[in-house]
Image (cartoon, rainbow, N blue to C red):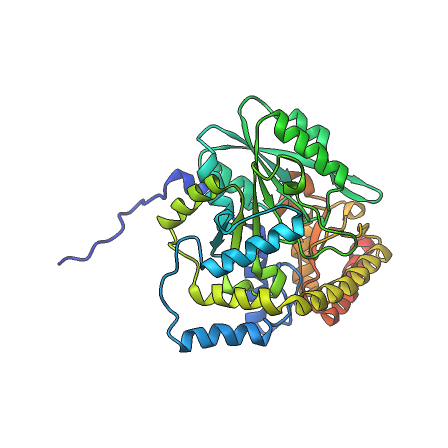
Length: 400
């Protein structure tokens, strides 16, 4: 049989262009290229935890493989894991869920696409945060929707959702709202009053919500809040969550969606025709994490808090105004005083000082005067990065 070749002039479907490219991965490629040339790179660009997965979780996964646990699971996940998650998510958010309200996913990202496919028709408008996780807008447009950004306001005490801006952007075609709390990249967390107002808007305009709670467990004071805790919101909200950020299990690719049974049934149907099920070994490891992982979560959070306090104080001392994040593990300092784009700042810092961070443009067009620093890297790395950023800033300011 003659081999087949791709014809000259091959072009991918136009929808592929709508996905764009995440700048964080461009930074990662540049950092890897430097490392391949023998340079030491200080990585603060990825939301990748520097903690090892707890050994008891690893052992459960390894034992599952040795015991031949390599088959399919039900599309929605192992029943015992769904039951445990239903109890856990309900308890933490003061609502009641059953296993029919939980669907296990191969990490958190797939929940975004399945939520949109299950609830959004072509031409529907979807509100998403700007700044925010870049995948939101790309997937909305990829699946034929209209991505409508709503903003954040920067105040002396930090960032908050611009609720007035959000309300102005609601039209008769608005179908969905994506909410991210605690927020990537600013670390902002909603207050109870803000949650109440969001719930009012959702009910008034008959919307459905994707509540991205990937960093729900990483809050430094007070109690984490969820929109599902507001009256009538449980029937309109799908929660996205992931084991990766909570238990240092990013490579296990394990997450879940929690929400109304009918919406999850539609999402699981899509799951059946795409990925079938999350890996059984990862699901078993996830069950072990829920049983015996609470201590590790608290230890990691204490260390994140130490790093948060250090990096925020250090950046402010260097003249890079930085608000104290309420949750997650990202700092979002300003570079306004340098009068340069965050893209140029990030590129020069990587080339000259081998410090990798993410330009603000990665999270929205309004963020060209900020950069994101992940303090999921080690404390020693943070200290070295601060010293190198200081050298770079002295260089830039000396050029003026």
